[in-house]
Image (cartoon, rainbow, N blue to C red; front, side, top):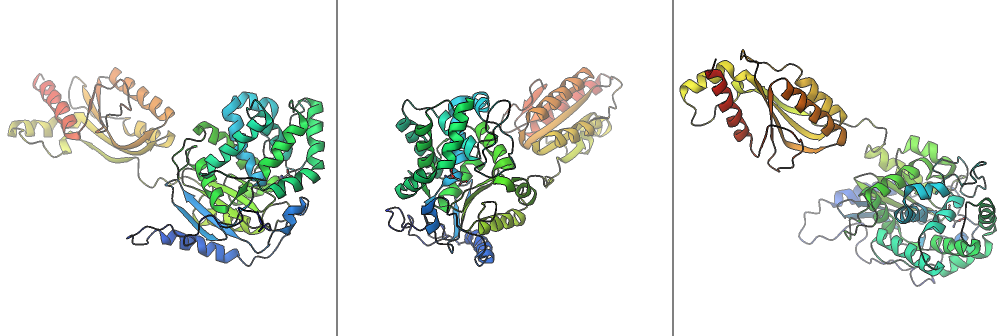
Length: 479
Ligand code: GLU
């Protein structure tokens, strides 16, 4: 916690050289990433605007000069700049992670019965509930987070909090502790949260004991973390729920999708819309000056700097995270680049190099009729646009045989993944082609069986070519 040097946890946990993971004997190439982060840190270090939160008295003691930036890749590597190992209380940054735990415990339907998923467009301590259902708008504002906390399983309040503390630690990759001073400070002055909780109890949105739930919520907000911890926590969300440092499966992948969605629409208080417009990333900020932001599938960011802008977001953290998003081209609405073409080879057997052991007569014959065997070699992920490219590419398959018999070799060995719709479209393609007398064979050295129903699967292109050519030569002989 900033400003509480007496806390036993206030000393940096990792005394190693800041910013650089030690790799004995390495070329130091990964330092370049730490350097890029350091440059962003440097660019905003002197941005001395905003005010430190004071409504929780203990937070008012924070050092406004602190500024830490950390990035954890889904590979498990961590890079830091500035005060990335200074502990501070997690505050609202606990909300997405406790939301994840509630979703694991209760499932989406039950959680949504108690708390909505709509951006409130209001500040974190807004008291507005849905006029019909009495539900708080979303789990990222205090009202929703208090309800989320109450939904976490636990036979007793102690057990519920123990599970929350445990999951926060699992996200961070090591056990975490509570800052007792901040907890007491918030508990003594938390009348607005009490008002919200009692109001929700009266509408039925909060079914549990009000004081006990608030106590757990205040303790949850007082858990100590560092920017480095936050980076690992958000990298776990970026990595489908598996902590990239410890390898622990913390929450299910689908839960990370739900949590990230709500973070994207509601994570930044009443700045959520403009944040998404500018940074284009799921994020959450907290009144102690922390910010987590997620480059889905790539990395998690953890930032910390106590001075807040008028909407309660850390001034330096917002500026730095937006800059990182810009430099890394991370905006969610950015048109995905097709950095490799879907079809890297589109040819026919009469144009292929002939196989060993073919007789001169066979080679001659294959030059005449080889166009009956078409080849489509596919790479990358087959999602909608890629599937469409493949379908269009086989609209007209040539056949020199009077019988109309044809062959198609789908070479999938460079195909990384076929999404559900892609597989459905390609299966439809296979059965349509088969209905028209086209024999479809697949090449996949990894034997992943990506396409059910094909005539044959081969582990090498050569085998597929030989099989199709042998059949073609046979059919051509019959002519
Ligand atoms: N513990 C704080 C509260 O409930 C968290 C607020 C925040 O970080 O947005 O007021």
